[in-house]
Image (cartoon, rainbow, N blue to C red):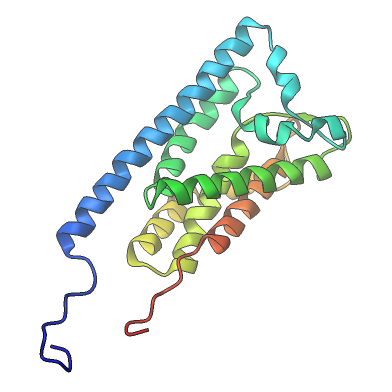
Length: 209
């Protein structure tokens, strides 16, 4: 009741509404990730037919002409083996990242792509050509884990803990190591994910404000 004696409408969402919202988010997330990964496979098929001609649109380090590759590189791969290695973790981590909303997920993806690609362009040896969605994989990992820390919602914290427990070993890939592997893309993808989680965090709404 309020001061006038009229009933106060309930605030907050019911459990049923939350479950429906979560299921709706899961469906949308599954659709988006299926389309995204399918598009990568379609591009790789074309690249195979063209004898790898599309790979030249990747990130060419320190070359101004290679800057557009920041946007194209995540959709290009060095063969089907490379794409296959990225597809499963991309589907899983991307699904979890997108379950809270497609708009927020797309914003996070763009931030990750830009931060990862810029880091690769700036820090890779001059003339190095980099392709692949590994930056997104590491970015979604960082985004999901950091989202739980920044948003402080029970489900996000749980998802972050689960992802950290299952995929913590990929962090080794963000360190200089095996030749031919872009640790720069991994490292800056991870950083991009954390940055995205911070920039897109949901601010708590105070009751009565």
